[in-house]
Length: 341
Image (cartoon, rainbow, N blue to C red):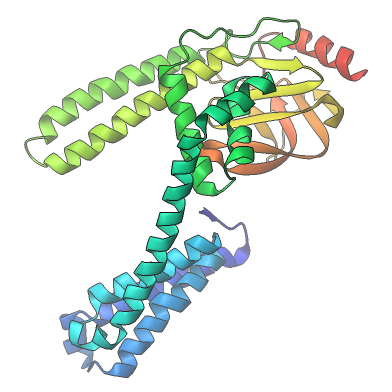
């Protein structure tokens, strides 16, 4: 769920806040006494319209929502209405709440069924990955989409499975070695910075968990789980950085930056390359972190937009990408030799 880049998005978000806040205040005893408000069926019905219809519409105007997310907001509006509206006024509308929860339960059951199917088809997916001839970071998600589904929930679960694989099961793997490989991290401090981040998270986890556990055990447990997840995510990032340099192989171009973004497209999709120019805002940048300020060295302009895979399996169309590698001259020679420019 991302904010729309339109002039109306901010207005819709502001109106959404006003609608929700006004309905919350309407059922506060202090507010009712101050404004001499008497609750009637018409007032309650108006609140239901606001929370179940108006709020999702405003949310859709402010954010990019799928149909399922819109339905989920409608059900969430019913839940809020049940919480804030006195029981004697909400009773006639209870059937709506139960129906909404039933629809959400049906969606949840469907998604759980697809996740079960994903795990059941792991052997078939592994066979498809081996036949692709590329690493798991490039082959796993497409194999899942072909053999199971491209549903957003499946893409999220697949992304998490990739994280688990690289964090725990990729230590015996070796980075590719052939003429089309150009490393991107060896002349940066990317790996060192990620290791420092792991140390910081571990130290913070030990100290904070020790102090918070006796005061707020539930919050302490939640923070512990989030910190463990963060450490696994950073370990996976290190492994992907180490194992997957930029590759040109079989007339295909492969580039990845951790679990955040990755691209694979044919060399024939490249229109032209500019060296030493500044990338524009709509350019996807593949550049590892460093302690000092660094800039991309090359910008690839594509003939037509290609689909990039982002964090949690999201998809994004890309027509320009900027690169920074350890050996820019080697990359230049490689691309000019392969695409004939």
